[in-house]
Length: 333
Ligand code: HEM
Image 1 (cartoon, rainbow, N blue to C red):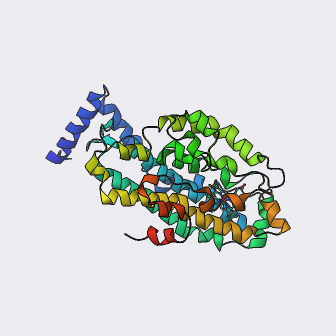
Image 2 (image 1 turned 120 degrees about the horizontal axis):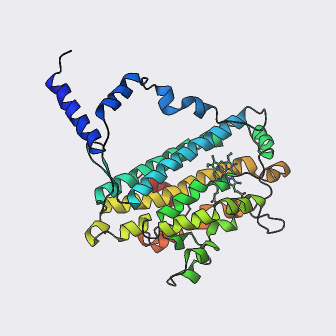
Image 3 (image 1 turned 60 degrees about the vertical axis):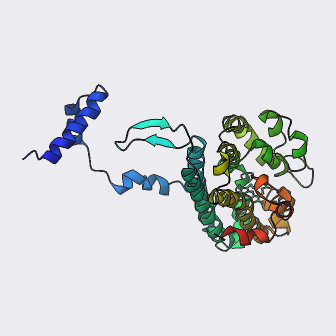
């Protein structure tokens, strides 16, 4: 075989790479001779993925419910990866594949593009929620839902992690208590006790925390506090405020930030809430299928008034939060 200049060039680069790490190129070439070709099924772990649906009942629609939750968790993961990239200014991977760690400074174009990705994921989720809303028989849902108690989407940790990475922790404090903490430099632990979602998953009858909420806090409480500490100066709002004045005025950036606010805090919660109404409108069996929680009072975005970036909205827009206007805002570019 002829060693062409192209092959010699690659060999020389490979040699530099391995020698640079104190490794022997010949040993690695031997490994290459022996190793198998990569296949699609090994790379994507498709068999494992397709084995992860374990329904608790024989109702066929339960699998739709499981898979759609899994799809959502994967999209949440995509969103979280982008939020992490923004928080750390982006990864500095050289063209030769060498990873030099996080960058020192956040570039505004990178910031905008990564927010666009987060928005794209949430818009896809909002549009596809019909798979839940229209895609299952109500009778089947109400029946298999009983076999899932006390589990609930309420216990999605990634959903809460997205919120923590998106905003100043104060904005996640219950709206009626937020003013008590504003400007006081309160600790994350103090604010965590009053986080908005503690108002959810309580029993209408007794006003007590449900097991759903208790188990969720037990499993993730400490992790959320640690993440919030880490993201105090890395959350999206903190990163925005760390930009120079001119970059902070960038209209595209402001647009994407507002989109994130609307997508995460209004449009997804609205389609989700509408679906809950469709399946759970009040009758005995539907109430039982939630464990009898206060979801109707809790879930609507206009009641929760979660707003990540209050400085980017007018007083009127904030008052109208969660009502009709936001649907017009979302796809206007
Ligand atoms: C037929 C479909 C669905 C119905 C009827 C439904 C119903 C509900 C209800 C009633 C609650 C309130 C929890 C409570 O009070 O115990 C809730 C919360 C929640 N669900 Fe769903 N859900 C559905 C699908 C989904 C899907 C696909 C996800 C994706 C992960 C999800 C994620 C969540 C989250 C994150 C919360 C907490 C929301 C918040 O705290 O504001 N749900 N859901």
